[in-house]
Length: 167
Image 1 (cartoon, helix red, strand yellow):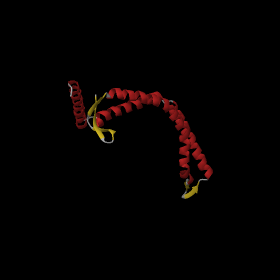
Image 2 (cartoon, rainbow, N blue to C red):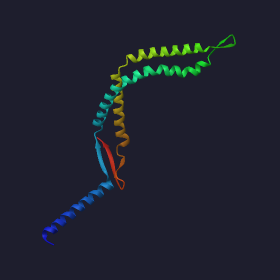
Image 3 (tube, rainbow, N blue to C red):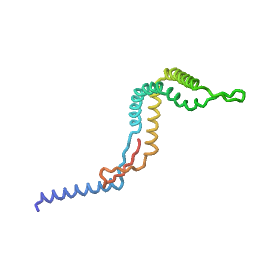
Image 4 (cartoon, one colour):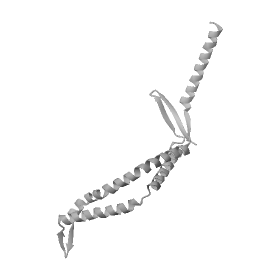
């Protein structure tokens, strides 16, 4: 074997040994990942705010349209058995009265929703929601995930422990 070939073989074996040692260290000790939880929370906060500002007006409009009818429909069985107790006598109300009461409740609920939801500041609600989500994410990263090893499996036969460290 010539000196060049011995040098190539030695270099290859040294590289193979280095990869084996690094692989063993990674598999036994794992990998530690440091996440900037504040930057991640800020990104999530911006995304949630943008989505909430787009979706909240539609959601409130949908509630205004559907809620009174749903409440009136759920009152149907309750109003069917209505009666007036007069001098010890039970007088059942006719179905027309129950229907009229149901429609008045739906109309009053519609007026209340229109009045209360019309002045709703959806931008402020979106800000509050996004702030709460960001705080919960940051808390989860700092509390529940910090220091707990997670197992990453790039292949079914390979398990790499990963430790998340917020920072």
